[in-house]
Image (cartoon, rainbow, N blue to C red; front, side):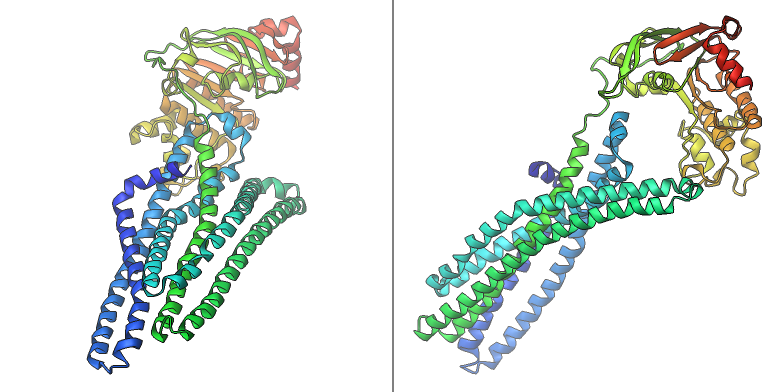
Length: 569
């Protein structure tokens, strides 16, 4: 874990080295103050050497100016380095998230993932800057103080440094408690973020059902768990700080007692005793830094560990010999396909059918039969448990993912629009498209005239999830996105089921135009939209119950005929 953390310093090694050099010089400057005080008390003042006092003051002024520059460099560039490392980590984890399968997002809350990327990495950034710096300064000051104090009186120095192992032992013993407490607190922060994200996203439903009290109750539960986790974390911190403070205070008492006795028996003089007192302050300063470092280390490494948990998730991968399809005709075939989500019950069991290139196949039937699952298996959003899904005679598992998904367009019931402009949402299907191509796609989707009527035209921001647009307008932008992508295979998953009849008819005209000449798989609840399909499959939880064209299925008087009668009503 530590080696992995250190690897993020490599792109910034020059800045890191400069930061440590400045930290070393700062520590070196502080080590000379007790020696200067000793000389003033033992030589300059008793001997009335005013000229040397003035020179000493000028030397101190130069040292202070140097320290000012060094402090600026450490504070500014040190934090800049930490922020750059944080940005590098955030880029790595975001890039990795794009490669993770949908199963990961099915099992993890959006708010929790966001908490790991934002909150956790903030603490990692602080550790990246302050951690090595504090550790380095502490070691330099402890070694320097030991040398300077030992040159005056080694026995007294050894008495003082004998407390260091006690302090380290106590800190190490408390480390495990702090680590667990910090980890628990981070989990609860992620849960609260997830609850907030869920509540804010569903605010319209909450208001529609007047569920403010229930939302408050849920939030209060999560908030209480966070408070309790934080309480345990601060209890561990309190035990750690109070214990280490007592040890350092006890050390001061020992120093005054032992130093006073050594001074009384003339083993050291008053000037050396004063220098020892000052060195004790220098000695305790790195101790406090080390204490802060341990706390910061726990906080930062806990966040880094949660960050690594995401990076260690296995991404979607292509086989070593995966092929890239070029001239795709669009023939789709399911051969004895079985599938289940996780360890749950089987959704598809030994399913087989063929969708010929350029034809339209409709999937209808009751909910829970696996129609949407079939749609998800073609672009390899999920992997089949058994059997094969073929595109132009090639198993989709043997096709490079980028190549596979470039050849497939999806228009779903739940249209997701990004909080950006209309233009950017349409061009999302093909970012390198020209302005003319985007507008042509909008015309094909019968949405161009509406867009031009907006205040800012194509530069109008649609709001989060397209909240400023109606359902039909969002659906047409989704269709325009598909037109622009221009794939040989099109999947329409309940694309019009959430629309009113008038809007549905208008959207259907755009969909008919979109699907012309393409291989099309349609999932539909309203059977009027699929009656002209080349073949219709009735999917139930037992597999394909019926198949055929609209007229023959209605005439057979089976499940499809019942669904058709229900649709007409």
